[in-house]
Length: 115
Image (cartoon, rainbow, N blue to C red; front, side, top):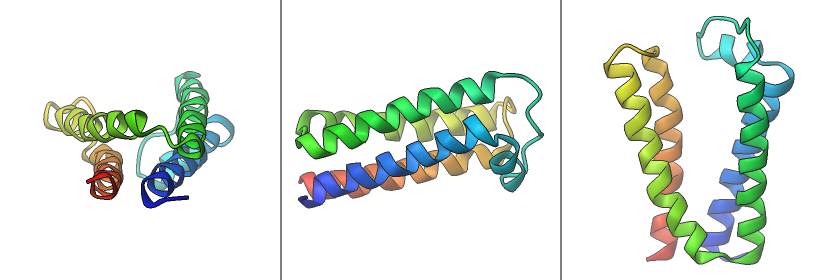
């Protein structure tokens, strides 16, 4: 695996892991992040979406899909912008920005390997 493929593969593993947590034991990661316990099915549905999204990352990494790699760079920066907006407008707790920071860090890693 070249460095670009590795960065996307590692991010895919992270996304699948978060998805599995949200699907099967949603209150564990929520509690660790100081969010309220989930009482509705949406966090589990998000877990399913994340597992599928993570699969896309893993498959694209193995296929060397450079166009996908670039798309994820901009998309992951978008997550930082979105989570920051949610926190600033008080629609979510500030710690949600942590997800955006992790995404942006992964985006920087991938971008540096592509340049």
